[in-house]
Length: 250
Image (cartoon, rainbow, N blue to C red; front, side, top):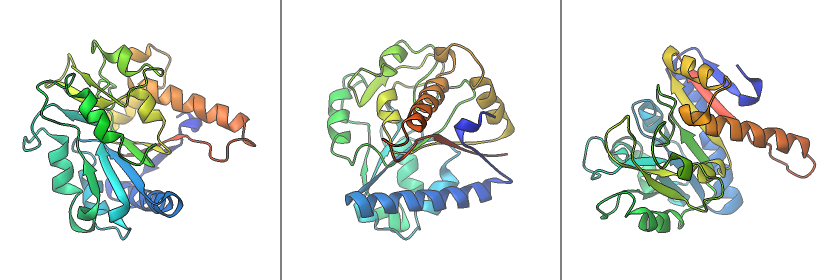
């Protein structure tokens, strides 16, 4: 495993959850203490559910925390496929119910038509995000940056100036809204949270040479690695060297 990726392997998912919760608690508390508010961008899927449940009870000033999504299916928040539904059910409970949550889905018919409204709401949050947690699919997608998506080049354009973008996967159902690559990489700290031997093998494949558009997680891994190396070279100018931290358990 590439050491610059900052890979953390745990004996089981419970241990991973405990350690990641500690790290997130520290980062969010630091954001509140340093900037008055902290922000957390989260992904959907089954992997983060245990973490969400655990985070919901941590003792921080949740009233000063902004929570948003990394991506969302263009379905109503009441839909079982909705990431907002997932977050409201498992994270915005207990003490975390006091956090401010901004979803991505709005009244627009399509995600593309809803981009401007979604971006306007996200712009109200504490940015850059203090913490952004990504997942990864078996096809190497992350956020809703899917291989083969027509708008993948625009969503990964580092000069797009866009916070979010509507995108239609060709390998998964539902149109999506996703944070763009520059918005993801602007986060103060990035995490990739994955579990299972299959995901480790996908990650190892993504770290091999290959076209980034074939496994879009490579956009994040390569850019974060590049930034980390550049920051390390300029350590006197930049106090915090940012690496993507990968948390994995079988």
